[in-house]
Each structure stands twice: as C-alpha cells, then as structure tokens.
Amino acid sequence: MKFKWIACCVAGQLLGAGLALGQTSPTSATGPTRESALGAIPPKRVSYIGAKGQKVASAEKADHREELVYRDSIGGNLRVYYPSGNLRRVVPYLHFGRGVKYGVETSFYETGEVKSRCEYRVLPVGAYEQFYRDGKIRSRIYLAGDSTGKAVNSEGYLPDGTPATESTAVPEKMPTYRGGGSDAIVAAIQQGVRYPAAALRAQVQGRVFVNFMVDDAGFIRNSQIVTSPSPLLNATVLQSVASLGRLTPGEISGDTVDVFFTVPITFSIQ
Image 1 (cartoon, rainbow, N blue to C red):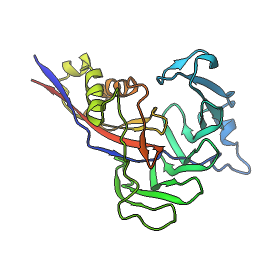
Image 2: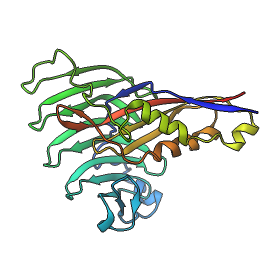
Image 3: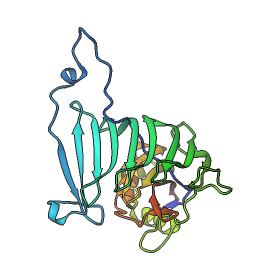
C-alpha cells in the first residue's frame, strides 16, 4: 500500500493574534468568583527560548524569555520579551492549555510604542492593525471572521496618514526558511509529516489545513488546525509546523512584521 502527502501554501498574509489585556470574566456579587470555582491561581511560569525557537534551561543560553501570568487556574496573559528584557508581545488567553484566546493581542516596538493589535474572541474579530512608531496607522487587514482567519480586504497608509496607492499591508519581504521562501517553508512542513499508523489502518485520507503565524521575530505562533478529515492526522501536522524553529521574519519598510500562513497538506493512500 502506497501513501503520499502533498502540501502547498494557500496564502501568506499579515495577521495579528489577539486578546484583551488583563480581561476577566464577569462574576456574581453573591456567588463564587471564577477564580475560586476553578481553583487556586498558579504562580507565574517562566520559559527561556533559544535562538532557534527551542526551550532552553537558563537565561544564559536564551534568546529571550516568555511568561505565563495566570489570572485564574487556567488562563491569563502570555508575555513575550525582547532579548533586552523589554516587552514585545502580550497575548491574553481564556484557557492556556486549549489555546483559547479572548481579548486584544498587542505587540510593541522595543522602545515601547504599540506595533500591532488585533482582537480575538476565540476567533479573530475585526481588523488586524499595524502602526508606525508615532502611533499613526500603517495598515488594516479585515478578517473573514470565521475559522479560516483569512484576510478578505486590506488598506495601507503612508506615514503622513494618507491612503497608500498600493497597500502597505503586503510584506515587501516574506519570511524565509534556511534561505528559501514560502515554497521552502511548505516543503519543510511536508517533510516533517508522518502518516500516522492509526490513520492508515482506518484508511483516513483528505486535506488538513493548518494556520500559523511567523511573528515579527521569526518565531512560530498560533498554530491551529482549521479543517481536518480526522483528528488522527492533526498531531503530526502541528508537530511538523513546530519543528520549523525560527525563521527569518517578513518585513515592511524595514520593520519586521507578523505574517500568517494557511497551508493545506493532503494525505492520500494509493
């Protein structure tokens, strides 16, 4: 029995990942709080990330640190830092373990100005916005508002605030992987996929669509399965995306930016 898998890049689009800073769920004035209902609040968890995107044991070997700051026993804020120690990104989660976001994700220039912002209520809501350092809008990308997270329209602005004739939302430089562009990224994911034995036994075939973001530092974030013929295929695809490590990020006008990919991988038994 032969089998194959095929991958191709559907789109490389800028996107934010979003959530509201410090947002909490409503509580009853007379009933228990969400925190007490879910259990004790865990202490902050600190991870050190190496130059290639892998976790390392200590700050001395790290490119930067990331923190999970709990609001309750299951959710809170992911805080990502520059190597200098300045805050790079804040991503609030309703549930860390399940990857459920709720609120506005915000990224920052190293000097502290807001760089990008996008609201999530599990799925992205509204537009992903990027800003110049002086706070003026650089671009808006309007999202589909469904599980695909695809951009349906975009608009860009010049530094003086006038609309750009060609959208500055489109990266001048797309992310690269070991010197190659989108094709190299897709090929690397394809090479890392293994047809699960359980899926072969069950004769499961079809296309798995996976979304992920290459953030403005080149790290893979927000990987999720959009559609899949079977859960049996999902883990190998997500593991392959994670194994990419750190890429060279995309750029607009000399600034590194977030770029979002949707990649389909076809599993076929012949």
